[in-house]
Amino acid sequence: MLKLNERVPLGDAVDKALEKGQLTGKDARPFHILVKVSEPDNRQSPYQGTIEEWWISSDQWRREVTHKDGMRQTIVVKAGKKTERDEGDYFPLWLRNFVTAVFDPVPDVSMWKTSGMTIDQITMPNGDKSQACARGQAKIGTDDSATDAFFNVCFDGKGRLEFYGSPRYSMEFHDYRDFGKKQMASKLISDPEPGTRLVGEVTLLEDESKVKDAGNLFASLDMNENRFRSIEVNAAQMEQLSTSNPAIPCGEIGTPERLLRR
Picture: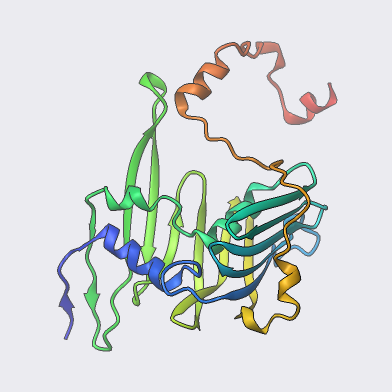
């Protein structure tokens, strides 16, 4: 017999999902993970990269992120001190989103905790619950230029994260597998643009104690670069930056081919 549960605060549901699925959260165990990102339907796709991390604790870990065109970021944290080496000119946003999905799948937890929103789920005969989703809304921009932005989060029948969507970062989480007390999504899916479907597959997830020569992995790097910084700019700042841009002359309007020939 189906039974409607009491409403659950959305912040509690997010906490539960992260407790189950965030590798570096509560009850974390040392791990070694390798994720390969590709566009399966296009072998020549520029969307190809890897994410690899060896993690002992929040004070000791190593991460290497690479892109097929030569970008490479290596971060080592030893005794809480971070060193970093960056190669290449640009860290693609789509690859950065997969890094977020693996290690920080809900990057703005406080927003959901303070939203006051709730979710309802139906308990099935086997004890699982129905899928539940919540949608938040916020304003981006100021005055007449303000527009609506939407945020979505969905959970599966076991309370695990199934989808997270926001203007900056969206990801689907599939095929959960056990790892100690955790359950890790072994397939991540993103659609960065129409007609492009990217898949991140966890090809390796093992206890870090099985890694050979682990001591050398956590040796501090001889530099601490920060080439791929991300700087948040609010809507008011963006509008101020664009106020001096000249208007597009009517004579410049035309087909993309025409503009490219100029």
